[in-house]
Amino acid sequence: MNLHKSNLSKNQIIEEFGRQILVPGISETGQKNLGLKHLLLIGLGALGTISSQYLVRAGIGKITLIDYDKVSLSNLHRQINYNKSHIEELKSEVSKKVLSNINSVTDIFQYPIAFEDYIKKNDVNNLDYILDCSDNYQTKTNSSLFAKNKCISYSSISINSSEGIFFSQDYKNLKDTNCFKCLFPKMYEQNNRCLNSAMIGPTAGFVSSLACNKIILGLAKKILKISSEILLIDLLTSDINKLELKQSKCNHTYDE
Ligand SMILES: [Zn+2]
Image 1 (cartoon, rainbow, N blue to C red):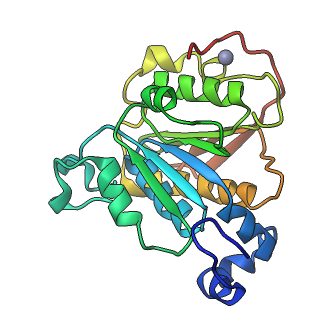
Image 2 (spheres, rainbow, N blue to C red):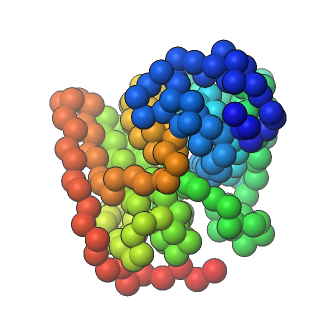
C-alpha cells in the first residue's frame, strides 16, 4: 500500500492502523484511500482541535489547518491541542507541532490566515473535503459556497451550550444545492460572530466525534459520497434529530 507520506509496507500499515482496518467499510483498501485524501480544516477552537486529533490519527494523507487566532488562557478548558506554555502562540502553528509525528502517513500544513485569504493565495484544486469548525457565520457561508462551486464534499459543525449542529452536503455529486446561508438564514440575526459561545468541553467532543466518524468513513471510500443532512443534537435531553436534505436551488453567490 503506497500511502501519501512514505512507502510503508503492508505490515507497517497493519501495525499502525490494524484496529481501524478491521472496521467494516474501511479495510486495507479504505485505509489506502484515506492516505490519498486531502482535507481542509477551518478553525482550531474546541471543535477544530478535537477534530484535528481524530482526523490526523485516522491516517488522512494531507490535512491543511487554517486559523489566524492565538491561544489564550480561556481556551484551555476545551481546546485540546493547547496548554499554558502555548499562550499567545498561533493556534495553527501549535496544532501542527502537536499533531506531527502521530503517524507515518499524514502531512500537515498550517496557515494562520482567514479562509477567504487561504483560497485566494493557494492551489485549491486538490481538496477532497472541507470541514468548517469556525464560529463565524460569514466564514461558514463562504466555505459552503466555495465547496459547492468547486464540487468538494463539505461538513460544518457548531455548538452553543448543550446543543450542536452537524451539517453536511454532498457537493461533490450535487451540482447546485443549498449553502449554509440557505439552510440557516436566521442564525445571522441571532448570533453572527460567536456561534460556539457557551460550552463545556465534552459537548464539543461529542459533536466533533460524530462528524469525524462520518468523515473518516466517507473518505475511506474510493469514490467519495456522503449524506446530505442536518443533525440537531441536544446533549441535555440526549435527542438527535436528523433532517435529510433534498436538492434545492441556491441563489447565493461567492465572489472569488
Ligand atoms: Zn445559498
